Image (cartoon, rainbow, N blue to C red; front, side, top):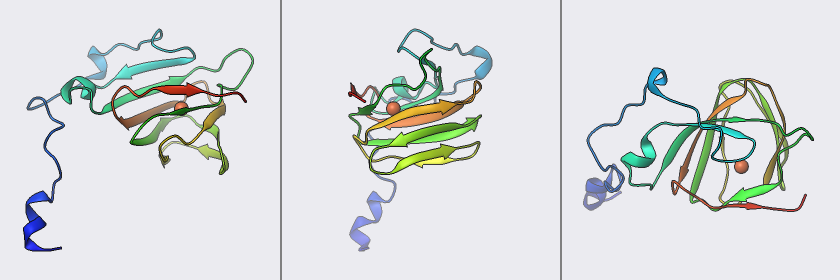
Length: 140
Ligand SMILES: [Fe+2]
């Protein structure tokens, strides 16, 4: 790396829209209505970054007939970190992947996947860019 690039070491500064955002669990609410089969707790990053990035906790809720439908997300970046419970997800071209507490997943943009099963308490931190990506439902 040349000295000329040292100024870029910490990347673009365009995400932040303010000095600080703190989301306390005790002051937060879970949104059960944003999307079918999911409950969300937004962590305030979406507003802080002007919608460029979203960080939220997700609790998938299994539909009565089982798995969540095959889909993909139109994202530039998508990662997840399991903070409670476990899940079994099928990623197209990869196969079934089990995630437990402490598992961290990065998935490439537009990788089709579907949730096969999860524990009742499954809770995952998701971070993606942009903050409000389109999700495309696919035929199984
Ligand atoms: Fe998904």
